[in-house]
Each structure stands twice: as structure tokens, then as C-alpha cells.
Image (cartoon, rainbow, N blue to C red; front, side, top):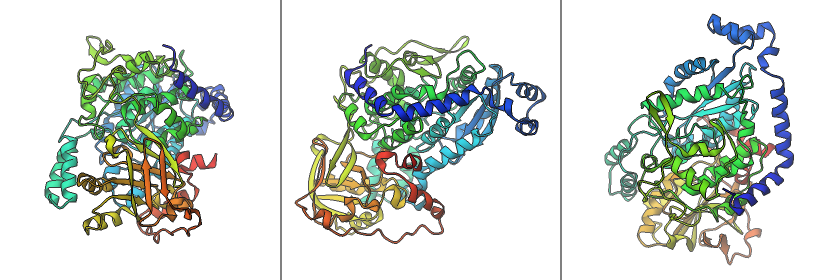
Length: 605
């Protein structure tokens, strides 16, 4: 299938823009690969340290560079439900790599925090910066010159982007990502959201809320709503870094175990010591990055990836911009509806046809590049088929021809929406991202007086005091990366949803994040430049008439000719001392803007 003209155009534009940085990156990676197994250059003392704990046979193999050595890097901890299943993976992967003729060593662990636990807490201010810490920790794990390939074990939020950025810094190695899968479906997300809103109104008590939340988040595996964690899994598959069909198989099943073992065997065959050398630097190219953006738009994925994909692309020498997201969103139809964009969860999406159906339909429409490298082999066509357990083990069965539930998953001939539901808005308040796929059309345009807050806690207090009972654009500023680490502001959705349900015109404008849980209330997020960097949000006042028009791409204060001359407000006094946040002061000083991925690496480029 010939690529859609817009797909070809955007890909070419990215390639031209990235020519120098991509060429320099690939030159570094190819130079590293040309040296052969790096451990062959280690001194005897260095090498002895590297395999001291191995079996005699593995010592012999590694000492003579006869077998590929695969690094295992894991984000395991048993507090995160999504990562708890990873406890058993290293032993399973070592056995699988051994069967494939290699050796595997557990190279290192990376931190993994849970945004669900830290929502609204001080710890949330460390969340985005943890992505860069994970990237650095991944590089530390791979830095010993002992490895010919790597397996990355991680699932949630900042963890997969961090693992990927770190992997790309060792881009001469082949790398496969190994997921854990979603937990079984619990309390439906719509019911959970309803109880949250009732709690915000004082109509439900803490016991009722906790019971509902515990029924929703109830078992090992990823949370089942389509937030950043599940968007991560979708992206790894469409970028060819998972095995086909691996993303949404539940933990503990025989198929999940078989897919995990197969990932170990697959990456062993991709090393420079084999016949199908496929380094991750060649997998993550301009076409794979465009495929990732297309799939994000087609599924209504997390807005966090307007930051993460930009940062990942930078790590591969590729310059991806918000304008690329906007251009692709105009031609990519919305094919999936998962909460918060619909009532279903990722398990229902998987049952309806899942990634195989989605990728097949996008390929047939020319909306994905087929001619890419993957950990499963050349070409994205391999990802049309679903895995199954056959008589002789793991097989990839027939491509699903139809969706079994068109309320969740559709083809390009009958989409939920003709575009991807992600809009870029701009005006005298800067640039921002709006996810409209979860917002009813009648709420796409809001013009109302501003009410300005410097934290989500202040907004909640005003709501509880009855001060917000009319049309309002809630401006929540000093929530950007330089101010306080850019926390997610999920606790704003219930009170603002209550106001919208009362018939008021309501919108949110913030330099903070909302991620995959954003929805219902129109929200212009990631406003750039942020208030703490001198952005216009710092000069907005209560009562200013703010217009958010997601249809026309407008974000502005109307009738404020003096906006640029107004004195900028100052953020509240820093309260970071004593909670660990002081350790991240250097990140806040060095971090780049949201448009550049909100990371320290992008700021240094």
C-alpha cells in the first residue's frame, strides 16, 4: 500500500529537518557496532568481574565471545500492580536466551513510581523527571561493555519512555521490550468516574470511594483504562519493539509466558553475532516515529506522548514537533474508543481485534509505514496476526478480518471520528495541546471569565467553598516542568465535571499535564512557554475573558491589549524541602519546554 500523501509528506519533512542530527546519531551507533562485542576489548580483570557470578559454561562462552550476552533491565517492584508480574521474568528470559544459544545477565534495575498513588501528592512532582532518571539508570546498566543485546522490562507512564531513551543511547544494541499485560476488568471505568464525581460533590463518603477504587484496581497487571501505561504498550508494538500481539495479553496466562520467552529468543537472534543483526537505532527511525504518532491518534492515546515521543525521537537524532502531531491528526481517523474516550477498557479492545486489527486497517489505508525494521523481522505486516498457542508452541494465527465490537474498535471505512482528536491551539497565551476525542462537540469552544489558581489544591478549595458556580475558564499555572516538575492534575476533573454538568461553560487552561485520564472537560494543557519561564499565563488575571476554541485552534485572552505589559505573577514559595524534591532542583533549572519534550536532554541539544 502506497503511503497516504500526508503520511509521506510529514515523514519527509521530519527526515529533512533531522538530517544532520540523525546522521550524527547513526554515525556514533555504527562506530560502536563496528567494534564487535565490546567485552572482547576488556582487560582480564574487567572481564572476570563481569562474569564472576556466571556458571562455568557461561564464563567460557563470554570469555571467548562465543555467545551473545543479553542484558536484562527491569522496572520491577511489587507495589505497582503493572510491574509485579515482572518478578518471574528474569529466570524465564535467562532460560529462553540460553535455549537460543546465548547468555543473559540481569544488568540493572530502574525506579518505577506510580502516578496513581502520587496523584495530588508532593511525590507527583517527581514523576516526569523520573523519566530522565530511568533513562540514565538504563544507560548505567548497559555501560559495562558486556552486552550484545538487551531486554527492557517495564510498563507504566514515564518508565517505558525512559527505558527507550536509555536504550537509544546504546543504539548499536538490539533491544526488545517485554510487557506484563493488563489486569482483568474490574468495576467499569464509567461507574468509577461517577463515584469520584459524587465524592467531589459530597454525595459519597470516603468508604464508598475507596470500595469503588479497590474494585477498579484489584489485581496484578496494568490499570485497564487507556492512559499512558496502556498507550506505552500500544506504541511499543506499533514501533516494532514488542513481539506482535504482546501488548494486551493478561498476566499469568500460558500465552503471556510463551510471548515473554519468545522475546528472549528473538533478541538473541538479532545480535551482531547472529545473521539478522537489527540494532534499535535502525528500528526507531523517522518512519517508526510517524507510525507511533499515527497509532496514538487513531486510538485516542495519552496526551503525555506529545512530550514523550518528542523526547524519544530526540534520543534517536530525530526532530519531531507538535506541528507534526497536528498535521497527522487532520488525516488519521479515530478507530478506538476506550475509557476515557469511551466506556470500554483495554481488555475489551483486545478481545474485539486489538492491535492486529488496528495495525491491519491502518496499513491498508496507507496510514502506517510498512517498510520498517522490527524485533520480529522486516516489515510491519507481521503485526497483522494475533499470537496463539498451537500444538507445537507459540504461533501467529490469522489476521482478524472484522472487529467483534464496533462500539470499541472500527475500521477506517467507519471511524468514530474523521480525525485523530488531538488539536494544537495557539494565541496570546502561547501554544497548548487539546485532546478533543473525549470531549463532546458542544464543548469544543468555551469563552468565559478566567479564575486563576497557582495549584490544583486552591481550585478544589474554591469549589468546595461554592466560589465556582458559573461559566469559568480555570487557569491553573506554575505547574510546568520548570516550576514544580509538571505534575498530572487529575483531581481537577471531578469538580470541573460537576460544573459542566450543571450547565456551565467550563474549560481548563494549564501548563501542567492531564495525561490519558483527561476527558469530558475541554482542557488546553502543556501550555508553552510555561508561567515559571515568563510565559503569558503568569500575567492572566481573574475576570479576563479567555477563549479556548479547539475547532479553530485558538487559545487567547480577549480584549487584553496590555497583556504583555502586565507584571508577571510569582509562584508561591517553594515547599519542596524535606520530601525528596530538593534532589531534583537541578532538573527544574535545566529542563526544556514542553514543546521540546520537557526533559533535560532535549534542553541540552
